[in-house]
Length: 395
Ligand code: HEC
Image 1 (cartoon, rainbow, N blue to C red):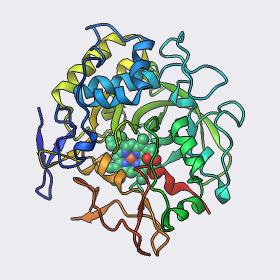
Image 2: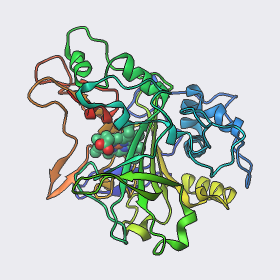
Image 3: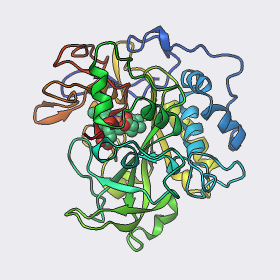
């Protein structure tokens, strides 16, 4: 099932775990081992789509997410993807409309709080979950975490949004982690560790500007949004039509979270970036089944690249990447390992680094997360429970 690939560093790596060895690897320990039980959700019938109730019975129940991440990770990925892309009830955040029709927007995750609504200037307290008026168009940001920008073949930048569900948001607010002050307080002796509730979920989305002429043959191949884009040199935001090219999803159903990524299948053509990690056979089969069942909707043009629940399997680092989000370091992209480095310090450096330079290339951290320099000392770090966007908190 697993295919090893070789890096320049001669480290054998395992791409996109999809196996039944959940919890047995050295990366997470037995604490995250969730034995399959008789009430695990049955697989969908070939050609059929799970209905809303079936999607919700997994996506809203952390224990079900945890179980299915062990028994059928690829189907879990699609259940979460379809639940999160279910049409939202108007006027509320994060609430699906059970009677809605797939393909209608905004979707559930599009009504979540975006990071610019959470990490405010001066570390101010964000407005309550459902407050702040109607959900506005997403505010796109440019640039990948390695500082580079990916352009599509039309010459337009790929852009990003990051958003969180109510469980994650309420926890951040309760611990005042939306501002620098609350995070610095984590460094005081006796402060409780950051521990999001099992219901917490976050997404990171990548978007392509849709060109009505150059993209005319594929306009209906995307989840489409009207979004705000601040021009490169600054100035007022303009409104652009964008198509979803990638969606990272993470759920706190496991102690080290469940890491999932989807992408639009034409990305290699529209951005010239190939997917460098193989999609394992089990995931590819599930992708084909869902794509067929979703014919006639934009979601037929998406695939799960894989699911990561452990940093290593059989002693080998696991990898997972998205061509639009980890473009240039796909072969050293371990969601879980890099996110384990999300941290804060009140010493000389506020955050741990997550890239190293090897032979002129930026390389991401892979394998079992380090235990140092986490600790109480002045130049040591406190873990932020895998949530990297907390680095956006301001003073
Ligand atoms: C080398 C480090 C690194 C890797 C690898 C990585 N991420 Fe992230 N991720 C980040 C950083 C930094 C952010 C903060 C948001 C930003 O600046 O874009 C982030 C943000 C996110 C978010 C928004 C929630 C949060 O933590 O703030 C999600 C969800 C996410 N990543 C999922 C994934 C998934 C899924 C993968 C693997 C396919 C992955 N990431 C790989 C560094 C990484």
